[in-house]
Length: 243
Image 1: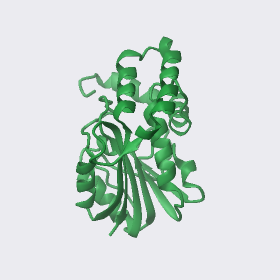
Image 2 (image 1 turned 60 degrees about the vertical axis):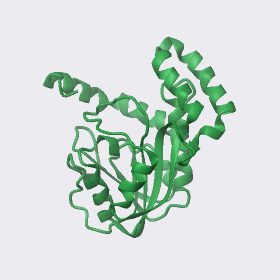
Image 3 (image 1 turned 45 degrees about the vertical axis):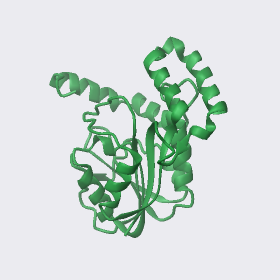
């Protein structure tokens, strides 16, 4: 990404921030459809987030919000958004490249939601420390990130985690980890990888939809797993409490 010309990066950013692209990202995450390029994992992620956020209350922050695709899963909670300054975005709070929040006092929020953000921030430790700072004592962090995933600069794509590695990093910043699961595991993950590498063409969307149905029907038990049960997983979902 950084080898592209400045004008090329501006064109890519403009497409990412178009109304059409925003609507597509929102629908693809909140209501994934069989045959979508990322259906298998995004369906697992949405269902796991729905369970993790059930019963949430109070004031929450979507930390690296983009289009806040999972807003509906927070039910009656108040939700504020934070994101990098970008044309066309209406975030409640701005964050800098290291994840630092501007104008947010300590202990402001009852919960912090972070979905597929941590792999993109230059300083993951600083980002987690800032999430800890803005949570009240006893507040909840719900965070998802990647296990195995293809590179996707936006503009940065910097790291991947194991379940144990993510638990360790979050705990080191003052959280008590309550749960941490691999998402889209084992053979279900293998099917997804096959689709990405061999069936990416739009002309093959029908075949992908058939594979997705088979994966849902036959491999539902492999949507999630904990270490050491998980060996191959596309994502990780962690829930923790601020000490």
